[in-house]
Length: 390
Image: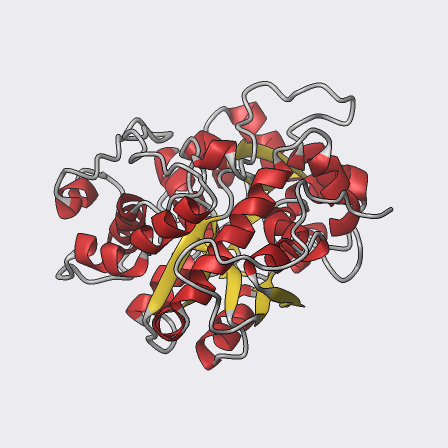
């Protein structure tokens, strides 16, 4: 199968905003997940050529490996976990490096899957604390990176159901492709990871998905396009061109049939290496029968650009959760940190270059436990409003 030709292809680069890119060949890292679709589409369809760029993709075995190569300059930019970018910015669990979050690549699309025994116990006993008590030992849950989104969704969900994620369970970090084998080997009682790994666990009969991340925070930011901040300083036109390229890819993914098409490519071993129908089953938010899954927020890539604006307020939320779980000592000006990391001005300039409007700030979301995230309130007071915290 050949990838669909993008509309209105350009045979030569015509500067859209502020001149040509300073650097034209970029190495982009990704981890094998379905929501790497924008970077894969950008390369396969060569959306970068219209903006003066040639992309080279580099699959990484884990988020830790991706982080290290991004810090070392071996990658120019990457498909990255939102929280990973902030962890590196703050020097949590590794070297501190000033980071730039260029745009949001995807919203929703992650899930929590329980082992069959624990899923059965939850169904029988009705509450998670009672279900965990049936194990007779401390349960083990996996996420993918200590400051990553999956750790935050897992911790938030556990706490919402009355389980302290730091005291009542043992949590471990496992690369996404290793999750299903760990669950099958009975080394885990549950996991939080991106697709297609939840779908694969369920298909193989080793676990059941019990909650989707979009049910924890509806339309939450998930994967982002990230780079070191000194890259933006050295190559500002390149950074804008890269954002435009990824916006074109995200827009393409919203086209009719394009998610099923990209699933065919993601299935290849150099990308994700899982059956295309399985990838498409959740990437398209349909069951294998082709019927939409009720109550499951779909993974979103573009929606007219509403997905992609890197709102600083969303970065502040991650900082509140780092504080909540004892990763970050109170004292930083969270809004100042987020405004430095999230390149909202650069994003808007890049979007303007392809005649794309930038939506205003998202409304205040209400999360699964009923807490509303209002960026206008004091972030520390927000943390103190949670009964379960470090």
